[in-house]
Amino acid sequence: MSKEYDVVVIGSGPAGYVAAIRCAQLGLSTAIVEKWRNSNKETVHGGTCLNVGCIPSKALLDSSYKYFEAKEHSDVHGIKLQNVKIDVPAMIARKDKVVSQLTQGVKGLFTANKIDDIAGAGKVVSKNKVKVISHDGEEQELTAKHIIIAAGSVPINIPSAPIDQETIVDSTGALEFKEVPKRLGVIGAGIIGLELGSVWARLGSEVVVLEALEDFLPAVDKQIAKETLKILEKQGLEIKLGARVTDTKLSKGAKKTVTIDFSDTQGDQKAEFDKLIVAVGRRPFTDDLLEVSAGVELDERGFIKVNDQCETNVPGVHAVGDVVRGPMLAHKAMEEGIMVAERIADKKMQVNYDLIPSVIYTHPEIAWIGKNEEELKASGIDYNIGVFPFAASGRALAANDSDGLIKLLADTQTDRILGCHIIGASAADLLQQIVIAMEFSASAEDIGLTMFSHPSLSEGVHEAALAVNGHAIHISNRKRRK
Image (cartoon, rainbow, N blue to C red; front, top):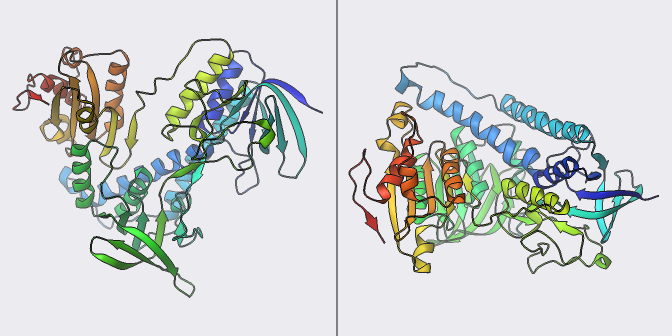
């Protein structure tokens, strides 16, 4: 027997659960289908982000940084600590508690919003039907006026480093180490690789990051990328660029190690590690998700084809989050979920795809929005630059956290802000001020004329805006034009 809904959502990650909640708020009868289960065979919500991505990695980043600060920097503040130790199982347990609290919270929101929570694997079989196969193999069919696909993504595997989740792990396995590996290899110097590498480097691992590309963080403004590389290497991460992994071999015995073969500018090389993290990116998860007869089109990379309103080629079928084009970011996925819900309810909303902030949660954080210098040069746009180093910030110096800088780019003719790039403490939160400013088409002068509290890290944003037009107060500056 088929049960009918206004909306059926497949997947309860950030895109799916937000879409479902907003649909219910708008008065639409809604069901959500989720197959993910925990070790107790219970269905859990939140997708990759809450379970094995954004949230658990940030829990470990915060715990590891507190340990690192206590061990390495407490003396600066006159705090004398001896025999500081890390209890890895306790750290992992705390991470799991945070995850559980948030995933249970999502489940509670479904109940509060009267959303039918259906356990099992969902598959689109037509423009208004979803087949659900439970974990016991039972099938049911759901009928819906609208279907929202929010199935998320999974890590990319590479043949040269097959995952066993013991010695060679993906980003999920890297969150579950029972002890600090003496030597840790990371394949991939992207967001995931740098964050996970940072966690275990702070706890004492000798970390080597192998990146196949010649350029470090190619999507990041070159000045920020150069500063990031310098800071991370100072923190102990050994980052090898142009390093292509060709093979891996596990040792024999109870406690395995992994030997990897790779080539770089110095030729063929070998390295041995206690653990190896493969972090070369993610792919959209569409496995067994779409019946061929449903007619939903994929692109050449396996993403579901959608327009700017996240509509597929099949009327009534929508797709959001990691299964569609654009950066695989939870906040982008959430906004797409809300947009689709609003449009199903005949309301007007559009995601501004030009203003999607990006963040790497190392310490210091790296965050950016809009165009970088290289993109502006390639486009032939004349621009002014304002740069403020955290070393000139009273608040940063007081906190002993003065690495990095804030860089603002503005149009030479209109002074409209074109981009902002930050490496420094609380970069993600500082950047959001500029995201809001750019959403309202603000100029650098608008930021410069705004009063900021003192002393605060936010004053750096103010000073960078002033520096765009040569008016910075707390640094020697002159107007820089390109």
